[in-house]
Length: 107
Image (cartoon, rainbow, N blue to C red):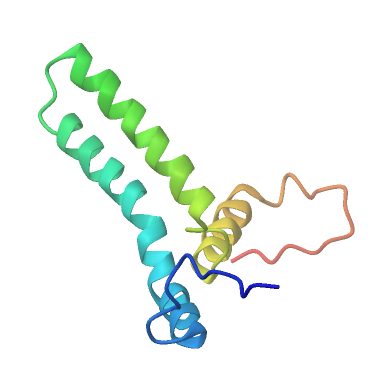
């Protein structure tokens, strides 16, 4: 048997350094395209007087939001929970809970 021929050179600093570099720079590289799309949408929508710029700006904004969510941005966080709590608590008043056994403090 002949030895196997190596087609690709080995990882320069080793597999551990390569994995560490991917873990450190991967999220930034994943959020660069959505950031670029969002910046383009902002530039297109700023002082917009054209239908084409409005449609392209909207399209870029939607694509930036979807691709940012796909990349993992904003999936969970404390600020999201606080906003959700504030919106749900402001819509609940004592008239909505009138027949329930929940006591609503009045000020």
